Image (cartoon, rainbow, N blue to C red; front, side, top):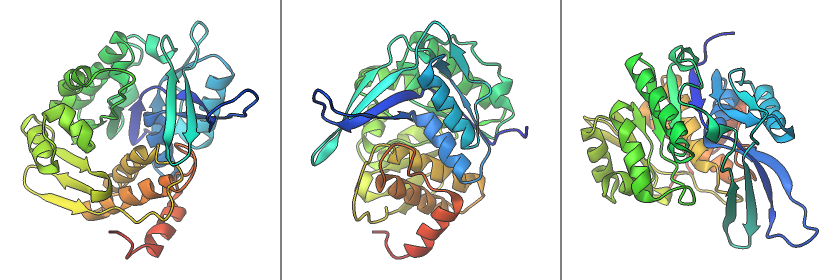
Length: 315
C-alpha cells in the first residue's frame, strides 16, 4: 500500500442524532470525530490518508471502521478493544439553534491508549501529521501520545498541523492553553478560530493572534473569523479570503473540519495560498449545507462544480 500523504490521530465516536427526545423518539446512527472527518474529506478529494485510533470491539466501532475503509481511509493501524467501548455522542437538534451535544466518552477505548500505542513509522512516512486539540483533553496518556507524535513528526521532517477544536465540556480554557502551547513551536500550521486564538494568546484579533503564535515558532497561522472569513499569516505576509454565501445552513457542526480538509488538500496540491483558502471555504460551506459532520463532504468533481458555479459568491 502506498504511503499516506496525511496521518491523523484522534478519537471518533458513535453519534445518535435527532430532535430533542421524548419517549419513543427515533435517533439516527452515524459517527463523528475531527480527525477522521479530515481524513475522510481528504480521501474524497483524492488524497491518501491514514487514521490512527482505537475503537471498542462492538457494533459501533466496527461500523465506523468499515465506513472509513470504504471511503478510502487506511484504518489498518486502528485497534479494537475487548475491554472498553466506543465513545458515544448525542446530537439533539433544536429549532433555530445549534444542536445540543452530549458526550459519553469517559473510559472509552481511545481514552485508554498509552503513549506508545503506535509505532512512529505510522506517521513518519507521511507528508503531514494532522492533530486536533481535543485529544489531550481525553486522558493523561492521550496527552502524552499526542505530544510524542507531534515531537517525533517534527524531528523527522513530517509537517505538523494543529486545529485546536476547543471543547468546553471536556476541559477548561486554562487546561487547553497549557496543552496546546506545548506543540505550537513544532507546528507548520495552526488553525485557530478567534475564540481558540484568544485562549492560546490572550489576543482577540486575527493579526495579533497570528503574530503571537508565529513568535512562538509556528510557521503558518490561519485564523478563522466566521463570517469575516479566514486570514493566512506567515512570517512575511498575510492573505485574507472571505467565505462563501450560504443560502441555508442545515448543520454547521463539521464545517471547521471541512475547512481544514479543504485547506490541507490545496496545500498538498501545491495551490497558491488564495486558492487554498478558497477551497477551504468551499468545503466548509458545502458541509454547512447538509446534515451530518462528514456526510456532506464533497468529492473532487463536486467541489470543482461548486467552485465553478460560485466564482462571484464570496462575500
